[in-house]
Image (cartoon, rainbow, N blue to C red; front, side, top):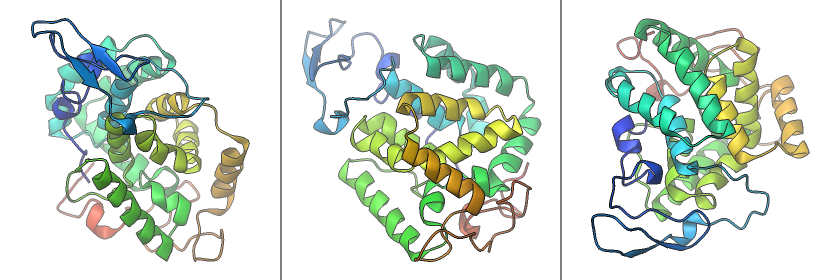
Length: 286
């Protein structure tokens, strides 16, 4: 599995307003148009409708798109490409305006950079590839190993296309780093709507990482704060997932069959996920 985009691409001026170079226009926090004085002549830009949200309970987070973009990159596998952008990422984390999500990312960054690359990779594989409760494939929590999951994945791909988002090939569209990248680009409406639809699964991942004392908990905490308080309904659904697992058929919630290895109870098993999307013997290694 690969990170949806490189750090330099995800945090480029074209996709990250707070990191825009001088002279580029950037959206105004509360409006639909903005003018920015820079090296280029004054000009107006329009924020696409898909970036707006009618939610009245939206939590205000400075540099919201940058927080989501950083969460996307930092939650990816710590491969050589990520380490090549280590200085850029550190600068981006430090440059975030003060907020609760920014504070969580700063805590993550300190813990992550204290590890050697080998330690970081081993921790990532054990945390996300070998444990179902912290799998990063969101549709699994909602649909389990049922026919509905395939339909949900197709629907998500169609949403991406409709919003002009073209993810990297070779990754399932419900991979959380990819969903976070989409949210950073598509905004609080169409973008964050995917995260909100999978809130019980995200909450279960957050709890699992907290139970294990993983530094990746801080990224999920940042996402959780940005999305706002967990509703009673979503908390109940997360509790049900924790106790019974996701659906195993099209009828209801029962403990899922485990064709890719055990691990729902929290103990590591064989790599979890469809075989074509997980580390192979000659592929990703801790």
